[in-house]
Image (cartoon, rainbow, N blue to C red; front, side):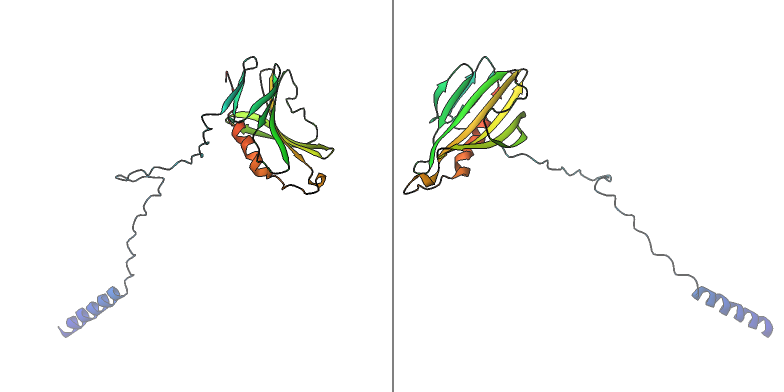
Length: 209
């Protein structure tokens, strides 16, 4: 009897020690939430804000309109502008300038021709050119300058074509060399005087787009 009791005691101790050496249970794994691109049941889709382009400022209502019906294009220019010369498909429009500087005049030369290849400005002294798109219309932007007898002509031209018609709008800043004066006038602000050009160009349109 004593032998059996001893055997039972030894077995009980062995099982108790074995229980103490059992491996530690693995921690519970929490399922990872799906990424925002994969919605779980009950989730509400988050709207993505689309980038928007800054709207182009509207031109003043009193701006005048230049139209060439035969070649099918139009654009607008300031109320103070004046057409100083015009032929069948060309014109010069004077633009207002800031008085009291060495800037003599500012104007637009409009020229439309047929079958021009390439469609480019005819002004001399081109220094730079690059393609440019305005309101979905492709232009070739060219810049240059011409000088002589103390007079400086800086110009910026935009040419575009449709079918067989080539249209060029050339914006010109005509200034004088300050060295021509005993008391030189203040130099004109080229950036400020040129700002009007992009506003005029933005109004260009084909009559039958």
